[in-house]
Image 1 (cartoon, helix red, strand yellow):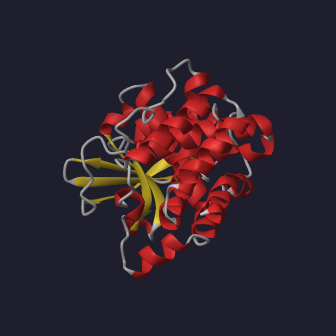
Image 2 (tube, one colour):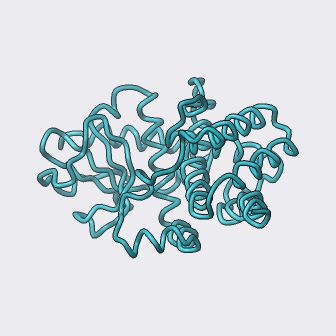
Length: 263
């Protein structure tokens, strides 16, 4: 049996248990395991109902140690793949992070281009050929006013008071440029939703919920935390948002648009 194939198929068995949490887990995505200088590529076969080894190639993606990501891979005709290293098979905690990446794969296939194409920041970054903008955009995390408004939003989210949350979100968006606000909106929906589902899995298996990003100094993880907590509350209010991500995205634009109009 090929390296890692057994572990990936064991993960597939675990994944079947998650379909009751979200229909995304009825889908299967290619997995790329970076191991030393090689990429081992696996794909799911509907014929056998299991993953199969596809190919092993030199690591021309330069995957760092302990990487967990989702991205199109040219070795599979730019299909969206979960990118991992051997550490993902270590324990249940790491496996949950892989399922977080599976959510990104599903979202990419169903919604990403349709939604991100609505944002001017995406068109600008495409025009200047900045492919890593989602990771390295210069968001003003250290600006004192913005940092304080993020803290206010996090406090409001913990209160679960929608009026307070909406006021805090509107105030935050008022302090951002239109481009920065679009960046926030995209990341809090995209990363926030994946963490929202991740925390459903954690709750199912009695693991500690993931709230990294909820304290200053802030970085990109603040989008995961603010997004997931807001989505959790929105789903409680309107359960359809659990699976209708386009409707969810539209709902999450309300305060951004209000903040922009008031500027």
